[in-house]
Amino acid sequence: MAEYWLISAPGEKTCAQTWETLNNVTSRQNNLSTNYRFPIPDLKVGTLDQLVGLSDDLGKLDSYVESITRKIAGYLGEVLEEQKDKLAENLLANGCKSRKFDLATYITRYQWELAKYPIKQSLRSIADTISKLVSQIDTDLKMKATAYNNIKSSLQSMERKQTGSLLTRNLEDLVKKENFVLDSEYLTTLVVVVPKASYSEWQTAYEKLTDMVVPRSSQLIYEDNENGLFTVTLFQKIAKDFKDRAREHKFIVREFEYNEEKLAAGKNEISKLASDKKKQFGPLVRWLKVNFSEAFTAWIHVKALRVFVESVLRYGLPVNFQAMLLHPNKKSIKKLREVINQLYSHLDTSAGQGSADVAMDIPGLALGQQEYYPYVYYKINIDMITIGIIVGSGLDDPDILENRKEIVVTTPFGNTSDALIEGTIKGVACVLLARHGRGSTITPTNVNYRANIWALKDRGCTHLIVSTACGSLDENIHPGDIVFLDQFIDRTTKRPNTFYDGAPNSPNGVCHVPMHTPFCPSTTKILIDSAVELGVKHHVSGTVITNEGPRFSTRGESKLFRTWGAHVINMTSVPEVTIFI
Image (cartoon, rainbow, N blue to C red; front, side):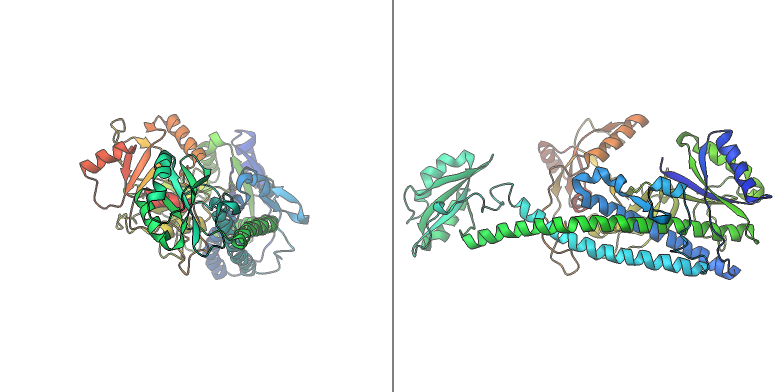
């Protein structure tokens, strides 16, 4: 379990006694948690007004630094590609004396880094130092990610053209010089894609499609599972007529000119891009690992600052409190909370039953809508997975999140449908977004899908779970059933469906996205296992057809969609899934 509780309580006769009391009732007697001292040095207190203002600012800084930390972790996972399963072992934190620790070891052995954050400085100066450090990391990350992604997308685009259907793929590796009539003043050789089922028709018809076709000039030079690639030689002046006639017979003439210099340049370009990507990969991974450590350690120092400030505001002067880190046992979280609440109930009898449902607004304590307890309490989740949740009509209730706060993200593609709501569910970091806006004010066609996905990625989301209301096209799928989609059919017509559209604010290059498996199988399996465990009626697969809307389909259309193999129908799955991929 990656969830930790960072709490503080006022010192009794000594801070050591406070530690012993808590450790005794939570760990030794009841085995509810594993506990660690969390040492915070004697920082400069400042004035009460300074503490009150800093308390609010530290809450915002906490959210910002955490989001950048998670963004770096998420991007490192993307860069590792096939080695993404090794992400955890690459996410390390540098402790004192530059020793590398896994994240759990770092926070359980936490030590304030005096060299980086001198305690002689004011609390505000330390917070500003952290803010500037992380802001610079974020700026550098955007620049490095853009440069690497441009090379990666260009290479992927060229590599995809080396495979796939003969109708679209590059032909350089399939043809040879001897397949063409070159350097002729009158003749030219065309390359034609012919369906396998039409080979006989082609052989019979190609000489008769127009005049001036060289007899017996057609050769089959390559074939895949569906089509064959034929050459045909004819007079240049009737090439256009031949192409038109061929198209009428469903023979597709590819626009291709045999030029050895261009062919060599294309191959060299792929080699150069592959070489550039390889050269950038190692330094980029090292940079991401180093700066993840910088951001993560900065985040934990922000937590320490928050504990210090809130403890002084709550417990007063002189400074006398004990900070403690608790690692709850997964099955004992509720009991642990009850025991700690009872232990410290004397500190504030009005808050003995801390709840996220009660909105607290205590000046200077920056609590907003998070849990309030009689002791200082912050949750730390070191699992670098952040789940984005896009919800549709009727499911946009932010109360599903604990410690929630609203974030407005500016994107190159305009505004998101609504503010993003960040928080946790059972200790897992989540970002909630109402697709149609809270109150369902945006039609499916007018949803800014690109801005929504961009914003979720910008906040460090590594996974995306999406709910959407559907109509059933299958008599076995009933109202209230959950269908875990694995394929889609796109019937939308008015929606931008890529970030790579050549616009000024868009990423550079052209990106052809593979879509054979549009929905993540591993995430889907986890959801299916949860549905089984909860006893929810569900279907383990299904094809959705996404209509443009806002109208529903006619009976005739629905019958047609059933013959296509669709199981459910909606108006929003596309382009949401295609853009996130």
